[in-house]
Length: 277
Image 1 (cartoon, helix red, strand yellow):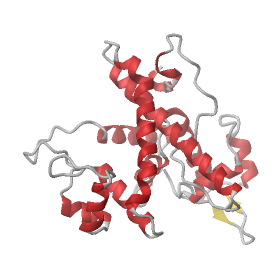
Image 2: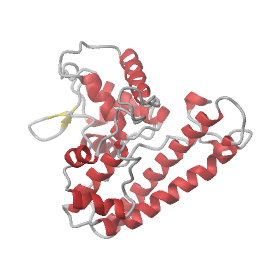
Image 3: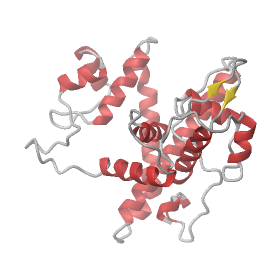
Image 4: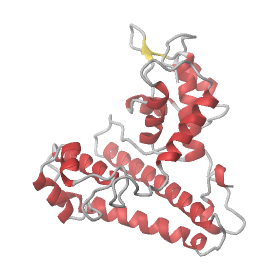
């Protein structure tokens, strides 16, 4: 997508007017949230008001469409946007063609690896202990502590990409004095979310259709994403009540504008994406 500032200069009210016919739940706070997360970068007037170019509106349409139709975490959407932005060498494309290329690239990275190439049966993203320590910026003692508390696990002698994300998050929290022992509640909550998702998609897994497992996986990820969104909303509400308002919690993705209608067979709780219906 283009980063050009060419085109009309719109205020936030005009942007909302353009987006609400398709995205009725869009609000100024949602746009400010996306800006805080680095997904959009509107210009500012001398008086500090946001000024949106047509490229900004197109970018917002991309983000909102992806959230609504795919329930993707903002991290993944930002990675797609960064890939589309490139480093200035990419020429301007239509949104449809750019989206198609980004989706295909993202889906390709999610395909299981065959393990070929290193002779160990590990994926190309697997890391050794030394590589994980360097990439996460933590020392061996901190990693051992995270492993002792079950926050990080390895497969054989290697660590997957999830271990890197956990290590980086824990390292950032450590700057505020949060140790591994303080994160047991978060780990327990994550395990409850996993259990809930597995419980809700179990009926699908019992089906013998060729696409049953893929559909169950899709629903499980949607349930998990919505659970994380709810968690972020509840924490933000609690901080507001404690008199600590003013910040923005990075939720993984926006919930759908309207809940999907339950399927007639009742399988999966009706949390089936538009692409799988």
